Amino acid sequence: IEYAAAMTPSLEEKEKMYQASIKMSDSYAAYNNLGAVYMQMAMAAASSDKAALVDKAIANFELSLKKQKSTEAYANLASAQLLKGDRAAAQS
Image (tube, rainbow, N blue to C red; front, side, top):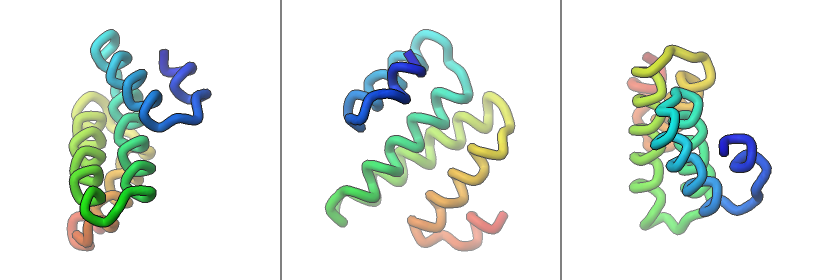
């Protein structure tokens, strides 16, 4: 499922595929990838929707890090926190 999600151009389809992957395997990579999809959605969203999508991304990056520590998830989490305007959290 994760390979198919990586190959599809539709963010909405990627979201559904990574959610399905989480239900099946509960892997840290799927949480990280789902968070990345939410970040991409936030970048393209209207400003009124942006904050909610960044919050979803942050939640998924944190879940990924609880499953397994990874440089990618830490970098993605810091990026999301910066996008939200939380410089202190991003630096930590």
